[in-house]
Length: 145
Image (cartoon, rainbow, N blue to C red; front, top):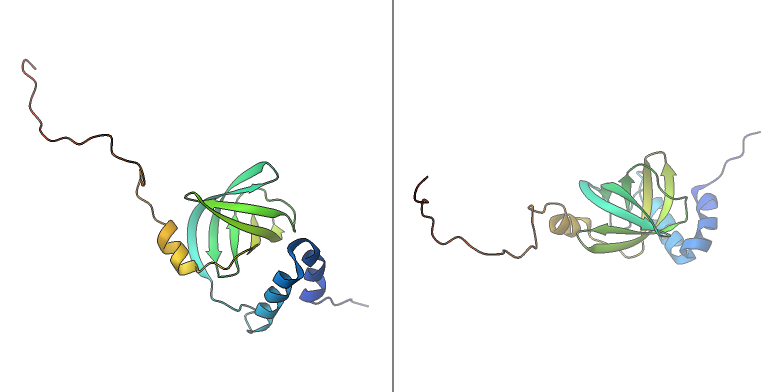
């Protein structure tokens, strides 16, 4: 006899780690659409660092929504682990809600508008935020070359 488990049955124990309010919000969001997504996902390619318990992993945010994101890297901590995702000196607090090999899903602690986040953090010119050390105002050829 096969046992069927609902997503709620699986996620409620994680609520002890993440807080029941966040899990209830996520379950409500998942139940709202046939695609199981309350808010649209934006496909992205944003390099980041994931920090937890004194460890870190270089990763890439592959897609994100207001409530969460999918990360791709090498090895992530177990489900329920609180993590900090760092992008361009911006820190996003989250918790791992699923992990499968080189990918994982995170539930963001605070809602983030993906369009604004992508616009502000996905494309940075080399040396962004670095103050110039000087400017060249005049060039002259050297004598005797």
